[in-house]
Length: 278
Image (tube, rainbow, N blue to C red; front, side, top):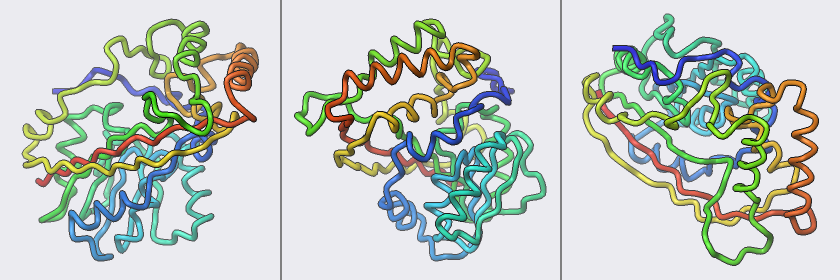
């Protein structure tokens, strides 16, 4: 049965790719260590990163494999991924422009398939079945759940003010309406759940659940928080159309007034890792 919670729109992240590098907090190196230890990765086999975006997880995990393939439906994300791969000298990664629903696309078999902040945009039952058939014996599906644009909201005293996320949300809503958007579509109920049932129906066993608790305080500037806002599908630049300059001016005014010496601070959220086996 198809998963019609959110239908793909090619404009989903239009204009957002260039904002990822500065707007999203990078995954910690500890994530690679945890995944490598849990799966006994030793530099052999292949990695498939589905919905790879700008390659954040692909490039972090690629050194644990002989080769890696990142696939994404957004060509701008892949352009950013190639740029980042060149910067870090990653030579064992291939990038493919295609939707997850188009798999297996003659890509072959893989030791591990990863999904990081991407699965909810897909026809999940269909993609789960197809990716399961692409996993080698003893392979694994790794779901990385994280919120890398925004830190923890608590009462801790920090060296700088927290970004005014509630006011940012209100500002976005004043331009785009109160219901969270996913590109040209709407997500009135938020992102879908039911992942565990989908995985079991496709024949996966598990899961093993791990947490990479970052816990460190990160300082970011006005430009970085503005990029974090534009890196989200619900506030991607194209959604504002000809009102984009006005929104950006209002956003930067809000951030400048809330910052101290142009700086913000947040404690990074933990990252949940869920491992399934076919």
